[in-house]
Structures are given as structure tokens and as C-alpha cells.
Image 1: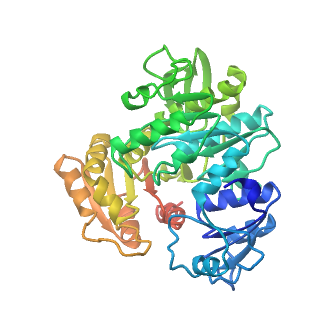
Image 2: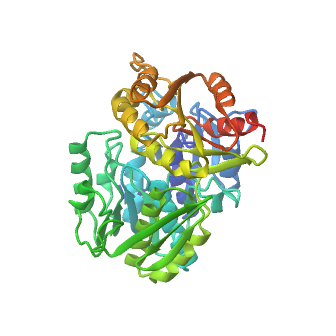
Image 3: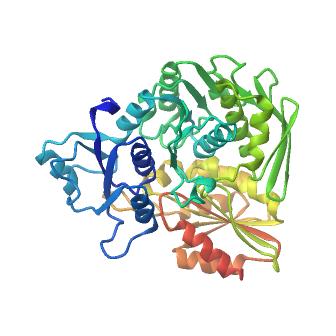
Amino acid sequence: MQLTDFNTFFFVGIAGTGMSAIAQYLQGVGKCVSGSDRLFSPTEKMLLQTQFEAQGIECFFQDGSGISEKTQAVIVSTAIEESNVEYQKALALNIPIVKRSELLAAISDSIKTIAVGGTSGKSTTTAMIFHILETCGRAPSLITGAGLSSLQEKSLPGNAWCGSGEWLVIEADESDGSIVNYKPEISVLLNIDRDHKEFDELIQLFTIFKQHTKSQFIVNNDYDRTRELSHNTEFDFGTTLNNVGIFGENFVQRGFEISFSVNGFPCTLPLIGRHNMENALAAIAVARAVGVDLQQAIASLATFRGIYRRTQLVGTNSERTITVIDDFAHNPAEVAAAIRACQPCAERLIAYFQPHGFGPLRFMHEELSHEVAQALRPNDVFLIGNVYYAGGTVDMNISPRIVSDAIAKQGKQAIFSGTKEESLQEIRTQASNNCAILTMGARDPKLDDFAKAVLRAVGA
């Protein structure tokens, strides 16, 4: 399809992160956009509904009432089944049904696009690239998977922006294979870890991603799997070999701030974690490919405000010196990276993780147990709660205890903490002065509320 084929779009499940970003972008470029979601209520509006309606996006309960003969295209994600009432209504009215990934590919074909790929760090790096280009006067557009704090402060969801410049920055997802649909001008590959797919399949997907890139394909030179896909080391970034175009070294984390040097120039960000140095190096490499001055790109990151639920500071109990941090980490590499990022914040870390599905837990439990055990310090404790179940027919014959038991066998402290209420009580019991508490998980829209409940539970 081409973006010019349609002017009136209806999104089924518009509250989803990926769907909502595309909907807002299309509204921003002058399309007529509406949508439905099972989370919407006809009696009490959620914040997202209010934000959509302020942008001119009409919202409906997911009952088919929003679709009519005037609707030119119905947009669905892979989560929408054919039995859905709105899917069936679109079929009955002979309205074209377009997958979210197909629409995003059509959008990226209509404008010069920067696509960010990799197993971990996509949302943060996408946001950093957008921030650099915006700060340096390039007026970019944005479609991403997490809200930028700077945009949320404008009373927006924060995961999309329609700028007047020539560049669109997007997060390219490999989990559903849709990454092969994009033909970006510039691409960046951050890392390749076993998450939704096995390594062989991931390598194949990212190889096609590289082949479809029109100009510069930028990779993280620190890892063997990404290095093997390098097009030109002068485009690449890294921290171990100084033959790359963007080289970072001298990493230091103090409080809630990291600093390092980039090609000899000092760089400071109000974030935590060594992984965020890698994300920043990737963003700087992309900015340089666009033509942004290196020192300007570095300087702009000092004002980067971060994104929703990515090592996000929830709050602090200054009397007890307890810090609560919330993160979207949901695969083994991300969970371990988040743990390591938070450890310098306190002498002891309490890390809570909610698995985001029975299938993912079955796929990754051995690797998760190993990575977490390697990351934990002797006095840290890892809590794993019940699996978040979003519905559907899935095999539930696996317990999170398999992870906590495996970690305990490796000599580290790990506890199966059960429900959110039981986990909150366990965190309250475990909390001590001079500790950091990290909450992690994906999919569950109430995890940020849980993190705030943790902060209240420890007396802040």
C-alpha cells in the first residue's frame, strides 16, 4: 500500500503503544483518524482518550460503532483476531484491513526515515536521536514505543510527533518480523539477544534490514553478532575497539547521572546505566550520519529528559535513603542491565520482576535465571511475581518459581513473591535503609501504578 491510498483511518486497539503512535502521526499529517479500544469506557474517560480527543482523534468503545461506510481503512495489529467484532464489520463493509506494520512501512516510504533496530534499547535510542535532531534545529518527526518525558509534559502520550523537517525517526520491531518491511535511509542495529526468536532467525531478519537500508547501516561494534553485519566501521559505534567512527570510553556513574567521553569530548546524561552510554553513542552516530556537528550532538544529550518506564526515577524516601526506579525490562539481557544500572544507587538492591506472558517465561527462564544470578550482588534480592496474563488460550503449565529456584541454586537471593499485593508486602518486608528498589516488566499497563504503590509502601 501507499500512504496516499487512504485519507480516513480507523484503528482497532488504538490505545496500544505501537498503534497510538501511528494514529497520532497520521492525524498530524492531515489524515482523518479515529479508533477504538477495549480499555475505553463510555462513562469514564481514561487519560489517553482525553489526549487523543485534544488532537482531534475520535475514540470509541470496541463495539463496531466507530466503523462506517466512510471508513477507508481499518488498521489492526497482530493481537487482533479475525473474530473481533470490528474486524468482522470491516469485512462485511468491504473495507480494506491493513496491518499496523504495513502502514508503518508505507509511512516510512513517504519520508526520509531513520530506523532503530535491535533486541534492547530501541525506544531509548529512538528518543535520543529525536532529541538531538530536535535540539539541533532539524524539526524531526517521531513514531516510537515509549513516551518521551519532554513530550508528555506537553500533555501528549509522548510516543509520536509530527515535525516540519525531512526526517522521521522510528522504532523498528523484530519480534513480529515486520522489520523486514522497512526501507529506511539510515538504520542502526543496537544488539542481538535471544528474546522472542532464536539467533538464526534474528540474524536473518537483521540481514534483510541491512539490505533494505538505502544509505548508512550503523551497528554496535562491541558485540560479535552485530559486528558481523557491519557495512563500514567508520559508520559504527562502540566502547572496546577505537577503530569505529564513534568511540566511547571513561564511563562513570554518580548518583542519577552518567558521564563518558565520545571521540575525546566529554558527554553527560541525566540517566543511569552503562547500556545508556551505548544508546547515546548510537544516537550520536546517527546524528553524525544526518550531518549534525559532533560536539552539538554530544552537548544536546545533557538536556535529554528520558522516557517512560526506562530506568525512570519514581521517587525517593530521603529519610530512609530508599530510591524506587521503574523499568520496562522484560528479557534476560534487559533485566540484567537494569539491575546493574541501579546497583550504584545503593548498597543493596531489591529487584522485582513480573514476567509478561507464559510463552515468554517458558522461552527464556533458563537464560533469565543465569543472567540475573550473574548480575546480583550477595546482599541483593530478586523477587519474581505472578505471570501477567492478558487473556487468550495459552499453555499456563509453568511457574515463575522455576526462575527463583534456579537463581537460589546459584547462591543468590531470590524469592517467588506471587500476586502484586503479596509482592508489595514482600518488598515492604525486605526494604531497609540505603537500598534501591527496582520494578520491572512489560505489557501490564498497571505496572507504573505498582511502582508508585511501592514508593508509598516504603514511607515516601
